[in-house]
Amino acid sequence: MLTLRSKLAALAAIPLTIIGTAAAQAPDPDPDPYGGTTYGGATYGIPPTPEPTAVIPPAKPATPTALPAEEPPPAEWSYEEPRSESFIDRWGAAMALGGGVDSFVDPADTNVDPGGGWNVRAVLGTKTRFGIEAAYIGSAQNIDAIGLDSAAVLLGNGAQGMLRFNMLPQSKVGVLLLGGLAWRHYELANESFNTSDVQDEDDVLEIPLGVGVQYDYRGLLLDARAEFRFTNYGDMLGPRANASDDMNRLGVNGSVGYRF
Image (cartoon, rainbow, N blue to C red; front, side, top):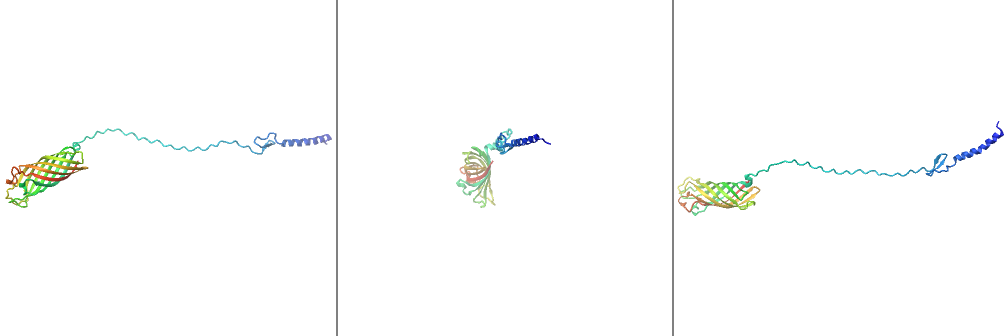
């Protein structure tokens, strides 16, 4: 059985217990630095504000840079021997075909009508001031004589060599001076009888002199010329042929050719 003294001690301890409990629940004299209140070791109130951190923007993608152009590999060195210019390249050559009108000049030969003439020429020196020509020449003329078939034709065929002087060798249009020698063989054709004093055939030496104009268009040659032909040994027309009448001829002709 508890004594009185024990009961009094128990009653006195009750207020102390209550005061200790209240003191335990009293607020912490040191408030939380972030604004909260601490009770019994626990913090209540405003949570702590985190310290701001620097915001790092995302890195921009690197701009691609153009790659330097690749240099072409150096050309391989090679040596090519210079092409030697040929004789034809330096001088120029051409072939031409032409035709025109031929006639005798002397009055004693007027019984021979003007006729056609033709030629085939090979030319060397179309690019230079001086050149040469070799040609085949031909002619055909009606002839009228007493005792000769009216259908008779005086044919001429021959060969010719000419020197040419081009006054404008570097121009498309050239002015030509011409001179040379030719041989022509005359003969009667298409006659059924001949009791005249005209011989059946004859060989004549000619000295042609002429002037011409030549046009060169990218290798195409156009040529026009007039020629006078002094002749010798021309006695085909019989007694009418004399020292002053050697079957001299005058002709005009044109030609077309190609320059190599």
